[in-house]
Each structure stands twice: as C-alpha cells, then as structure tokens.
Image 1 (spheres, rainbow, N blue to C red):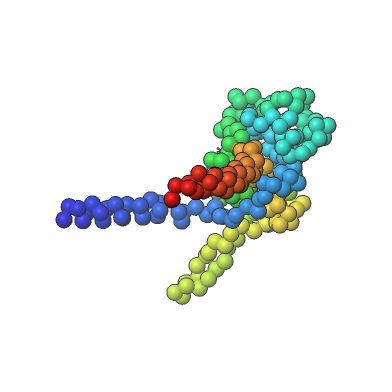
Image 2 (image 1 turned 120 degrees about the horizontal axis):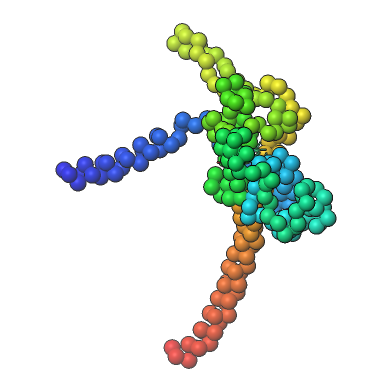
Length: 248
Ligand code: HEC
C-alpha cells in the first residue's frame, strides 16, 4: 500500500511543476530565424548592438579584434563603424556608464549580455525584443510580455513603433467576453513588422555568437574528428584481418 502511494506521488509530482511553469507566460515562443554561419546576419547584429544596446549593456568577454576576425570585418571598418569612444581593438566591449549612475537611472543595473543568450536561449532574446508594448503604469510607458515589469526602455521604438495588446470580443454563453489576441502595432515605426523581426533575429544571432564564439568551429571540428575515426577504423580493421589471417 505504502509503495503504491509512493509511486503515485512520484508520477504525480512532475505534473505539478509543469502546470506551474507553463501556461501563465504570454511570452511568444516563436523560433528565431537565426543562422550562425550567415556572416552578413552577424555583422548586421553587431551593428545594431553597438548602436542600440552597447550604451547600457557591456559584453565583457568580447574583444573588438576577435569580433572583426570571426565576423570577417576588416580592422579599419571595425574601428570606423563599431568603436566610437577611442578604444583599442584589443579592448573588451565595455560601457562608459558608471554602475552607480546606471542603478540610479534605471533602478537596476543593465546586465552584461556576454552570456545572456546561453542563459535565456536565442529564441527568448528574439521574442523579448519583439514583445515590448504600451503600458502607462510603467515608468517608461512600456512593459514586456517576456519580462514583466522590465526596467529597460523600448530602445528600438523608433524602428518598431509602439505595440499594444489587441483584443477581440467573442460571444460565449450569451455573454460578450474579451480575448487577448497578441500584440499589434498602434503607432508605426520606420520598419514594417517583418523588417523589425529581422532586426530582432540579427541581434539574437549576434548575442548567440558572443555567448559561444567557437560554436560553429566546434561543430565543424566534430565532423572532421568523426570522419578521421571512420577512416582510421578502415585501416585498423584491415590490419586486424592481416594479423589474424593465419591463426584460424
Ligand atoms: C537605456 C539603457 C538600455 C539600453 C540602451 C538597452 N537596455 Fe537592455 N536592459 C536595460 C536594463 C536596465 C535592463 C534590466 C531590466 C530589469 O532587470 O528589470 C535590461 C535588460 C535586458 C535583457 C534581459 C536581461 C535578463 O536579465 O535576462 C536583455 C536580453 C536586454 N536588456 C537586451 C538588450 C538589447 C538587445 C538591447 C539593444 C537593442 C538593449 N537591451 C538596450 C537597459 C538597457
């Protein structure tokens, strides 16, 4: 009897955590259209990052020089287009804003984003950047579906415009009920929603690269090692047959 109860409990417990974890969040789960081998996408991401994000978020493990090499951007272009405050290419991508001021201005310290894509995942970053919406109760007038009560302003509002929650009324059991149907742009920005999605994906791709700069190389190396082992196996097998030939 006791045993049965224990088993039942073990089976039942995980369902509880699933119920608690999922469902509640309105954060979209769209997969980010990201290709880490697409250097053009990573270059665009780096450009947007420097222009829209580096003012607040450092990338303390990323050096400008390495960025140029990995993304195939010539040194002069890195210096002209990505470095604005007299750094050297050997420097890491720091911010000029003192931490004390940052905390005073935003209430929280804008976190370093070097490893953020590894913690949150590429798709989350993509959806987070697309999920700012109007909320007059917040200090900056915006909130975020993926990060409720976020301390970050919608820094790309000039591109995306302002979104608001769309509503739809449906008749259910003789009653008009309001349903939430996702965000829609209410004040257009300079980009179409599709173009803005692309910008978000480029940034997510860039942060994924920064989180693990050798990822593509590592995967390529893996295949080469497997190929080597396979070829080596053929020789080893031939050798084994040669050795055992006369023994049978
Ligand atoms: C004006 C300053 C500022 C700028 C510019 C800015 N952010 Fe932020 N960001 C913040 C602050 C402050 C937070 C912390 C929010 C909180 O904890 O409530 C934050 C949080 C984040 C987070 C969530 C981090 C976490 O803890 O999971 C991500 C991801 C992020 N920002 C990405 C970006 C990207 C990408 C850009 C450029 C498009 C950008 N931010 C530009 C201030 C900024």
